[in-house]
Length: 194
Image 1 (cartoon, rainbow, N blue to C red):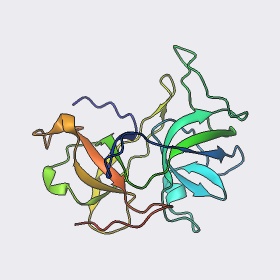
Image 2 (cartoon, one colour):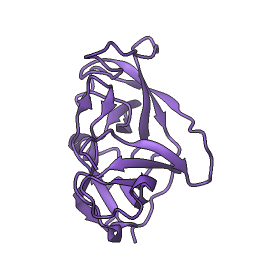
Image 3 (cartoon, one colour):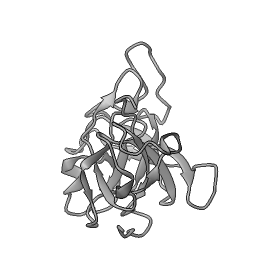
Image 4 (cartoon, rainbow, N blue to C red):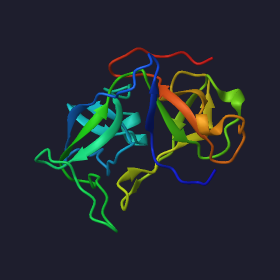
């Protein structure tokens, strides 16, 4: 598969639901952890604000769990950003206040690209994310899961639950898509690696 990370895309629900509810959270322009946020970025809740998952936010002393994945970005007046093609997608730039609608249900399954080839033997294990930026033209995340971090220790934010349906029978393919769920969720419980 082509190397084209697009963040975390909700694909299904562990309980069979077909719709994905969101909750709105503010994004602070003054937060030292704030970097550009786009659709598909995993976020944490720190001090009442949505903060993109980064190496800095991952080590924040008061927060150990992910809140969810961004579904939509809005400006500081809570109006959705629009595309201004060809160069400006709907995302919140660094040091800019705004709002994000977040998929907060801990039972949503996300499809995401792996930064390398992920063998089927890693299903059931935990994995971290790459430090992807924002595709500013499309307004989507450039995050992917990071193969080098696959582990059974409960410190990483996502659990691999399978190959994405488009990848069935194609394990070990470069940059394959996998399905993951949030491992330690702000509104749910921790999942155990197998």
